[in-house]
Length: 298
Image (cartoon, rainbow, N blue to C red):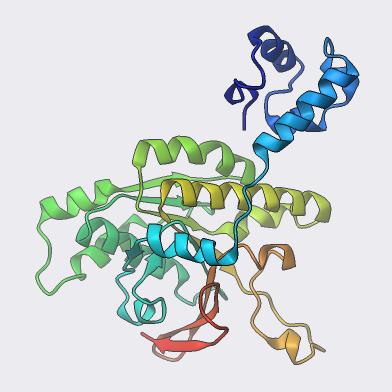
């Protein structure tokens, strides 16, 4: 939150401009700043203001029952266009929630993203924001799916209108995602946001564990807040980690990449796998259902 948004606390524009000149722009900057950087505020004034800012920015706690009631009341379900997957998702993706799909390379993750984009833009006539991070977005795949999505091929005008409803942006880093997302959401007002893939943004930071954890926490908080505030369904693509040669039985369980700090971020997680002539999808996590594993093929 920016300091200028806390007008009831920072009533002096001169003070906000003075702090801005010292690169203290957000509430987080202010709370972490050393007292010497907050001059002309005295130590006691700075302490009192920090207490008020911390209270204003603190999350509002509520019971798990109320959280569930809010989810049922406010969320809508967006069909993915893949009936087998919608079956295990109780109808489709929930708005305001994060769905993560993960699996090894070549298991149909991006194809599912394409089919979801087509269903939402062509059949539901709603906007989609597709954020690709590897520079390999395949527009031709989108068009092929559009042509084969219904028994009667859509008209060229319907396909053109649907294609316009899929807004595509290339995201290069986690910092870029946080900076670009608010403006992109304002311009597109999407029903679904896809990040393909999230793991590609995290990979460059894997050598610095503490930096990675801090960035992941910042990004996950930003994504959750955006999905909840704007009520869009958020789909994140992740990779599957390889099990160690001498792994225990628990370690052999399929695990998504990006470490244990990320495991609790998505409310729902699907595992994609490739079989001989089909894909299989397993529901391995759902925050609102008892723990279970459901597998479908398509």
